[in-house]
Image (cartoon, rainbow, N blue to C red; front, side):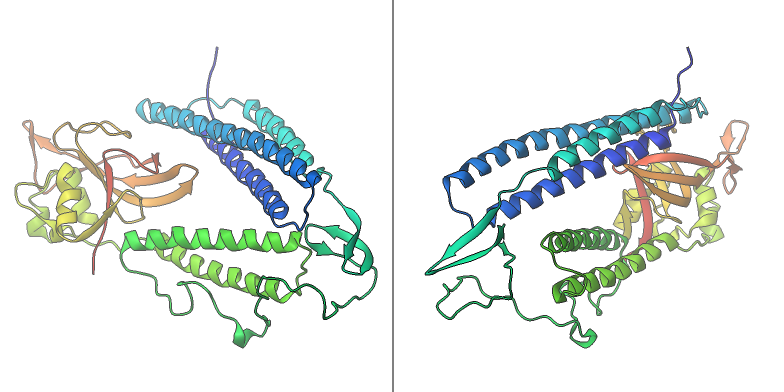
Length: 389
């Protein structure tokens, strides 16, 4: 029997599971918000809300199961990749098995969406005001009368404050975010990563807000829609600038010879790619110490791989590859690709040249470049960025 796995396809399947779970949760949250905001008081409403809550509970369990399935698939793909790295894979592809599974999944998702869209919302053909019956349709606080009707002066006043008038003039457009026109991309890499994450979250929240407006019947010419759309566009441009800055990575360099000649193997190779004299610590320059040395010298160190960063694999247990039990290993990050659950990292590195069993300092042996999957949080692995300014 032949077994195998296309890990890229499995990760795509897991990513789709998560996206669909998020989309379904978003639809249900929208329905809940509409019901809670409806101006509808009756016994029928209480029954309606009770049924909706039951549906929401079922939905929560379904989407939780979908996310657990995604997590299990990612872990299985990670196991296969670790085996492939160990035994110089890749393994045999499993053909259309996963495609058949994802096609089946798509049918299930479409059925769930169909159930949600097919919910029969309550509708009242007329509603009564003091001394007047107005024909129309009442649907979740939205009135569609058959003529252009204006509220009389005696109409009950709402406790809710009216929203401020918004215009679509460009000169009156403002960004309600710290990522406005005065925002400057930070030099520190950890802060840059945090800003990328925070900005992505802001954009997603605004997109959900825009979806709610569309469901309320607001068109593209609506002032609120224009304002939110403009803000999304502006923030996406800011996010693109951060992503480009991260993609450019860290400039290379070369360690002065008086330092580099005191290193051998992988550490000497890295000394040809980056200037590491800034965190030199005599007697503690085995690879396994580099991340601690760099951190104490004021360098930014983190768990996310970046082009041009130094990858430190500490001695002892790590989730990626076998290294010297005492010295550890360092590699130079040549390229990084974001994937679901982590990163595909391409690295170059060197090995120890020996004479009579002893390491030859000031030299290295070029080793074959590697590309492997690094999980978002990988034990025993760190990346050295720039020195904090």
